[in-house]
Length: 288
Image 1 (cartoon, rainbow, N blue to C red):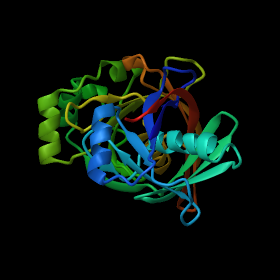
Image 2 (image 1 turned 120 degrees about the vertical axis):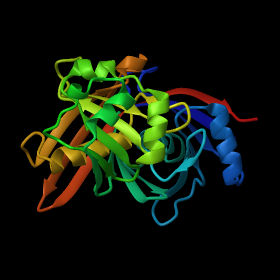
Image 3 (image 1 turned 30 degrees about the vertical axis):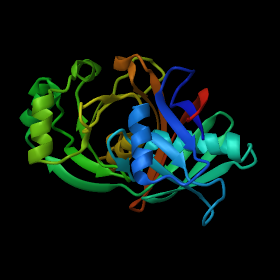
């Protein structure tokens, strides 16, 4: 079967987040897809189950090297890009993916793809800033206390941690045993840290995302988590506005600079969250 490697949320090739997209020529079991994802060993690998649409969308499954996930941002955009270019041959301006969380529409406008994310759900808050600081290997005073440390999900949950400065974001370095204790005693969840500063003047926020998978690797560009962040920023009036349009940096500490664009609003209690970026083909291969 054919597979494609794309870079998502990138401004040019070899930036952003890598994704392998498989187009199976026969039915695969979940175990086979999991084995392939582990062999590829990217943060996620996606599988387009059929070139025919079901209920108006394409059935897609997404795997990390260790587990299947119901939704993830950069695989959604990257898979829609491959469908549009390879299967759909640029005929449509919207591709719908049938994922475990439901149907996710992706709009295509030139070289930019944008997905609509589900309504954010707001969960537990964590008041023990010392515990979070110890996980991130930063000082307790680096964490803002005027906004909560909170669990948010638009499909794939993460804990959002507001930091005071770009310097604090850069200094984060996961303490593995402390993170494992956090996962075991509080909640198994990715961590997103952010600050309202950026490397480049034209950008608005700096973000880093640390995964709860074994090894606790860092993700260079995370659409789902940034969608969660959009809901958080609106819910807590971080910018004192009901509508936000932001350019978010991620991946700089990994030498995989990424740019994620958020357009979101909260009107009469209803959220509308759109996360977008560019996608580039890097390679095509044949799985033997």
